Image 1 (cartoon, one colour):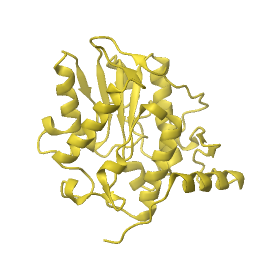
Image 2 (tube, helix red, strand yellow; image 1 turned 120 degrees about the vertical axis):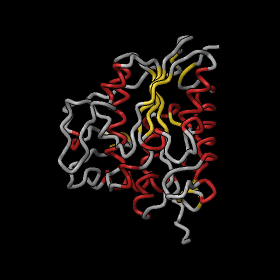
Image 3 (cartoon, rainbow, N blue to C red; image 1 turned 135 degrees about the horizontal axis):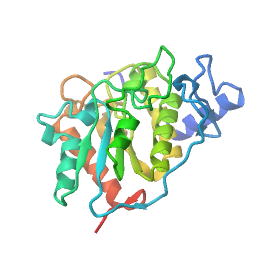
Length: 266
């Protein structure tokens, strides 16, 4: 396997700063641009003018908090030998120990565009909101905490990281307006082109700047030579196996128990 060069976060920051300074933060597709490391609205999403909001840091969750998971195939359990062994299944079991409910609305093949509210009118080249699995459906479940997991499908389809992060920022804004805490799982490696892997790295870099303590970092613990570690591959080069799902759940649990994004009940 050819080893891809590792792109340092400093090099990527310099590259983005250069592009912004040259007026290339927004390309001819009309996607969201990066200005001083911050993501502006994604015009391809067709959601109108947006003022992004961030949830209150270290939100204190109620004793019987309700979780909703939204995302794509990995969140839906793909790659695991049984639903209970998926990271989402392990999370639900963890919360069930305290009689807390978890609702999983993830769906295989979904992207950040599928998650948008139905009033958005994405470009024809992008996926359309799925009212059975989007943010409106999530809010209808009256959650206290939402786990957002769209790790690689946008990048695999050739969509820019700025688009994906802008869409996620809209989701977090709508949740913040409703008083709902949210956590975002980072990009996950998969076996695809070097250009697509670069988009995953850009996605993670932007997420770390925008979402900060509410990101669950996954890429490094699942990768080998910037692709999915063969020891964690379920067999398709895309989805992790049972061991990989354990690593994802452990990273999520560790992040939640640190208390910087949300504060769990004692």
